[in-house]
Amino acid sequence: MLSVVMPTFKNAQCLELTLRSLTRQTLSTDLFEVIVVLDGRMNGYDGVERHAPDIDLRIETLPQRRGRSVARNTGIALAKGEVVLFLDSDCYATPQLLERHYRFHTETPGQRVLLGNRHEIDWPHMTFLVNDDPIPAELISSPDYRDIKFHGAADAEIPERMRTTPWLFAHTNNASVTTETLAASGWFNEDFGVRWGLEDLELFYRVYLHLGRDPESFHHDVEAASYHLVEYRDQHGFYQEMFENISLLRRLHPHLEWEFHSTLSTIDIADKVCHYRGVIDRCLDDGIGQVPPVWEWLRPKLPAGRALVIGTGTGEVAMPDGTMTFDYAAPVSADNYHLVGVAIPVSSGAFDTVVSVDIWRCLRWHDLCEFLREATRVASQVLLVHTRTAKVPYDAMRTASEIGYLLRTLESRFVISVERGENGVTGITVRRRA
Image 1 (cartoon, rainbow, N blue to C red):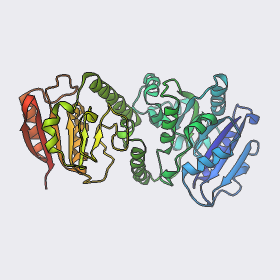
Image 2 (cartoon, rainbow, N blue to C red):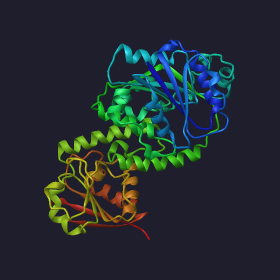
Image 3 (tube, rainbow, N blue to C red):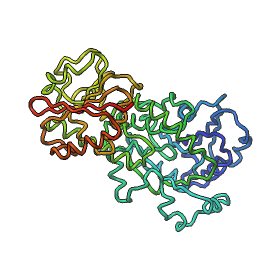
């Protein structure tokens, strides 16, 4: 059996249409159930079940609003099926939607994930849906109405994107997974509370980790389609809540795979993750960013317990107690994260100094600017260490003229000083202007 789990909050008019769409499925009604969870007691839902008289429907109401994570977890707990399909109550299902998900999991059993496709629609499309008529294909062929998670990617690029960063595309408006996988990965994190956004991606990141980062474990089916119904959305408020959730995500997963999450498109975020995965692999292979060779010069510049050091090999030297590190050669721990530094998960003024040994030279220019903004937020000064390493990718400091241009660029916003040490070591100290 397929268990369709739908949370709903103040959109009964959408739920009515979605339930009607589920009565018109090609999948036999004895092969699926629908569990709707009202996120708190709300007006407008009385008698909503009449819109789906011929399906196995259960409506559960939470005593008070708890958020989408709690609502979905409530639905999972009630599910009788071996596979859970997460569908949003504002997503009108095409007739083949449930059958596509059902057949995916029954024809090739295993712990896998299927992501369906959701078209963004507007008023001309709603004219058809409110009358239970199919939307003509020519009305949704425009790129304006394609699935938002793939905006900016050509159709031919989607499979590779799915292979490299699949959790970034795992929106639970149309996604199915086995209950076995959910049990092993953990359900939705309820710490997201009633805030909007990202709780679904966080769950499927844990699914991705549980499945061993297997690139074949996530699939996309453009024919398992739904339509995003028109309703009032406070997009500005949603984004404000999402930024709070981004902070939570970065605390839960201090890894570059979440460091770049922002209002950028999913495709742009995926590009950054893939790019810096490659940069870090190259740094480790080529010995870029090593702290031990510059330690004798660097050590006197580090205050006890008030420094962040970005580089590799930090375990080979006697770091002052309480020093935080971003060392990709060491395991992630409470004081060592796998980040590049464009988002530093500590409070403002937490450090006296942030040090980056050559790793800063591997950042694309816009990301270097973000790193300097973040580093000067969390510390009173930033020390950019430049060595004679010849293989640094995206190195902006190959010649004296490039160094001079870089310094003039930074001087427009920061107080800059330069110290040249032995063996070709250069230290650029950056302080925010008063």
